[in-house]
Amino acid sequence: MKEIFEYLDYRLLLRDFYEHAKQTKPYYSYRFIASRVGVNPGFLFRLMSGKVHIGLRKIEVFADLLELSGRQREYFTELVRLGKAKRDEDVQDGLKKLQSIRGIQFSTIADDQMEFFGKWHHMAMRSLLSIYPFNGKNYRRLGAMMIPPLSANEARESVNLLVRLGLVSPDHDGIYKVADTFISTKEKWSSAAVHEYQKASIALSLKALDTLSKDIRDVSTVTFTCSKNQLETLRDRLQEIRQGMLIMSQDCPGEDCVMQLNLQLIPAALVKKTEL
Image (cartoon, rainbow, N blue to C red; front, side):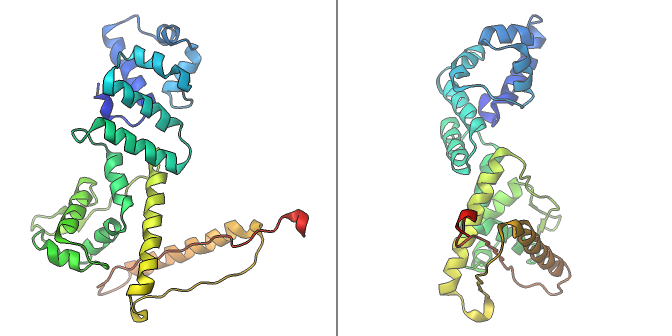
């Protein structure tokens, strides 16, 4: 069984604990555990299947079942709170608390994913390495290609992160190549991570208004009226634009730059039906 600090879902922890306990204690069953923690066996089965959560009042009895104390008990408490979190901000706060409790000796894929989405330049670095033959030697030059430029250390850390995530790797000649791998956004923390990336990308656009000349950027806005019922149609149109840009990129010869496209569609005013 893994160390508790390697888990990001307390229900997977409970399931692994159950499977491990059964190997040495034949009497361990859903009914036995349910009697220990004061729930019915059916609820316990759904809990370990990832369909329900325990109440906050049950944290202590489950921690006793797992025989946790000290940092491990504190970590389990925050795992449960993270599992029940619904808002992106609460998920982010929960992940930071878990990272603080477990320390630097334990790391999870969520740590790297949050780092990847937390700053704009990691995604851009991945794209840059797809068109620039970088051999892992001159990080100062690599960082200077970014807009705004990165330091040599920032460029090195970005490449190392991409390697850890399996997004790039050096070939037999030492040239970094982009892998046909993408980060899964199905996990609970992914929504919060993407939210951070979107904020970083918007901030980058704001900075570009003051720092980049018009001949290498295009910023435009439009304000219009419509029905809220048309929102899905508008989203579909924006998706078509994004997909069109990606298709054009695949067929583009002589690639020599990485472009960032941000599309924001937000309401500027809402009228209630009763006011019409």
